Image 1 (cartoon, one colour):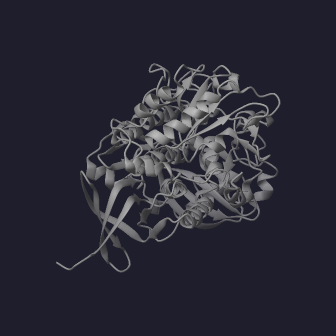
Image 2 (cartoon, helix red, strand yellow; image 1 turned 90 degrees about the vertical axis):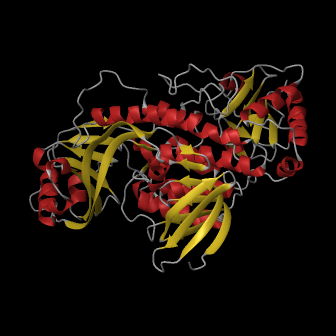
Image 3 (cartoon, one colour; image 1 turned 90 degrees about the horizontal axis):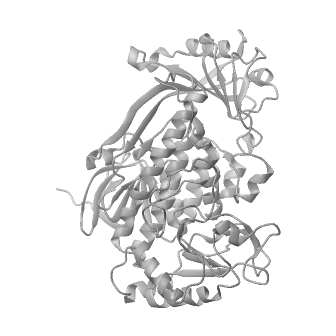
Length: 565
C-alpha cells in the first residue's frame, strides 16, 4: 500500500455550498481551525436559494459579512412580493404576498432586514470571507470514507483531478453534503416525512424583451397559471437574465432530455403571452421538492447540517435559512467543546434543539406551497388554518429543551403569534443601544464570542458575579448594564425590562448564538452561585475547572465591536 499524506485538524466540514460555507464563516469567526472539502470545482453557477430571512441576516451581520452580501445582491434590491397571473401579458392576477418585509416597524424587532441574494452571488462572498478568516477550503475534493472512535474522526479525502488521497484526522466532522448525503447514508440515519412532493426543471435563459412585458412589477417570484405556460418566473437582474421553473413529471416517465430548447422556448412564450418573445436558453437543472427530516442529527462526533438533515419545499426559502442557522447553533458548541469550557454532552443538544425547529419550519413551508399554489404541487388535503406566519417562524422559534435552563418544556417550538419576550430558549430580543464609545449597536451584536449577562441599573452585582465565574470556571462571560449613564444606553422608547421580562435588578444570560440560556427575574442573594450552577448545566460540565479551561477563558472566541456594525 502506498503511503498517503496525513494531516490533523479540529473540524472537517464536508460540503461547500451555502451551509458548508456558512459553517466555515462561523467557525472562522470563533477562531476554530478547520478544513472544508467540496466535490465540485467551484461555487454554484445557478441562481437559486435566493431568499435570506431576517434571522439569517442577523447572523451574517454579527459575523461581519452582511454589507458584502447586500452589495452582491444589489441587482434585486428593489424586488419584493409574490405575484400570481395567468400570463405576464394578461393584465390579471393578484399579489399573494405584496411585501415580505413589513415596513419601518421592522427596525424595532431586528437589527437587519430580509435580503434577496441568489446562491450563485452569495456563495462567492461567503467563500472569500471564510478564507480571509483562515478557513482551509478545497474544491474538487471529495470525502471517500470515514470512521470514528473516542478520540475523533478519521477520514480519507481525494483530489478529484490528481486522484491523490490523504488521511485527515479531525475531532469533529460536519456533514453539509446535501439531501442525498453520503455521510448520513454511511451512518445509517433514517428520515421521516412524506418524502417527494413535486419536481421542477429550473431553466436559466436570456430575454431582452421580457422586461417590457414584466413592466414595473418587481416581484421575487411570479407564478404563471396558464396550462400551456404553467411555472414560476424569477428575475436575476430585472433586465435580460431570468429563471423559469417548469413542472416536471419523472414519475410518469418524463426525463430531463424531454425538455428540449424548442419545448422550453414554447413554454416560456406561453407563460409570457408573447408568441415571438426572444429567448436564449442558457442552462437547465432538475430539482426536487421534498418533506424529509433526519431522525437523528448525528452520531458520535459526526453531525448533519442543512439539506443532509432536512428537506422542505422551496416556498418561503426556509430550507437554506434553516441550514445556515443549524451551522450557527453547532459552531459555538464545537468551539466550546474544543476550548475545554464545555462537557461533551453540550454537542448532544444540537439535535435536541435543531430537529424540532426543522419539523416546525417544514410545516410552514408546506402550508405556504399550498397557499401559493406552487406549480407542480397538488396537495392531497388543503389545511384551513396554517402554522404561524413567516416572520414568527423566522424570529420566534424556541428551544424548550437543550442547552437552556428554565425553559417551558411544553412551549410550542413556534408560537401561534409573534412573541419576543426574553424567555429561556428563545432568541434574545433586539434593541438599539449606544455604547460608552458612542457607537450605536444592536444588543444582538453582543452575542458571538462568549456568554453575555445583561442586567439593569439595579443589578450591578451580576457584573461582579460574571467576573467571578470566568475566573473560577474558565468560562468566558461578559456583562453589560443597560440604562442611562451605563454601558449600554437604550434609545428613547425602548424598555429593557419589558423586552427581557425582568425587573431592573434581574438578568438574562445569553448564549454565544444569541439565544437566552437562563433568566433571573430579579437579583438573587448569591448571583455568582446562580450563574455557576446555570452554566455548569447549560454546558454539561460535571468536573471542576481545570488549567486548560482557565487558559481558554483568556482566548475569547472573537473580537467585540470590530467594525462589523
